[in-house]
Length: 268
Ligand SMILES: NC(=O)c1ccc[n+]([C@@H]2O[C@H](COP(=O)([O-])OP(=O)(O)OC[C@H]3O[C@@H](n4cnc5c(N)ncnc54)[C@H](O)[C@@H]3O)[C@@H](O)[C@H]2O)c1
Image (cartoon, rainbow, N blue to C red; front, side, top):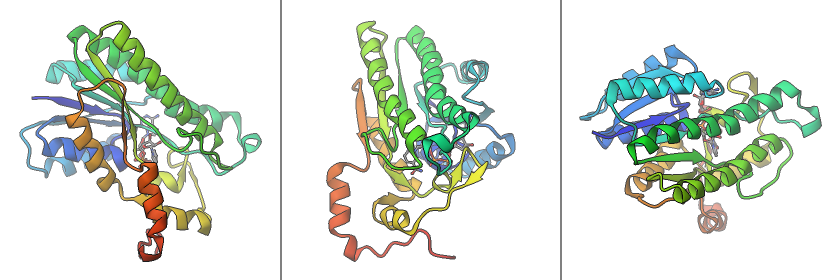
């Protein structure tokens, strides 16, 4: 049975992807900061009919010892890791670069960029010994050079993720590790992420203009996860770019916006 490990998967996109891997009979290992939330998510996953197991382990991706422990745990319990997804992420507070504290800058870069680099490093070390496996990193706003006040540090991290993942794919090929590396681009998803800064440490008030764009371009994470997981299951190529919101799809969404009745932000 194959195994997938997803960081930051107690909720949001990570949890949705875990559900789909479970439907495909994978062993699923979820990990995140908070144990109680992981237990609740594990119970949710267990309701899905599957031949695979569900395991959880706390892991703060900014601590390499936590990542090493997570890999050791998976190896001991399941004997292999087929797919590793560096999904954990935090949004930044809605501030200009010079208004952010150094602590805020550090946290965004540590989780979104360094967390994925360290996760990739240890996953690669593990997988190359086995001669196979796949590592995926998540792109986001900024990966395609877009810029917006209030997203510059997050955007810097995601633009770096794109470069880093391509570089990792190239190194993996040059060293014949047998491990494939790819990028997942989820577009805009209606998760806690878009309204919560730095994990759940602060609130982001979305301007009406932004909500309008999110209503046109955004999707719930289960919809995006469905596409991403199906593509990962099919993918055998190194350096793959699995992109949900392509330029063509975004253009189509804007062209048909007049018929779009979605309102993700309506008071319930
Ligand atoms: N929501 C969007 O519009 C959007 C768009 C593009 C990319 N992304 C990316 O998708 C990924 C998932 O985002 P989401 O929307 O599901 O967000 P989310 O906030 O719902 O989930 C992120 C998870 O990461 C966890 N996390 C935060 N810091 C961590 C740490 N140090 N160690 C381990 N886990 C940690 C959180 O606890 C949370 O469970 C992120 O990489 C994000 O940057 C999101």
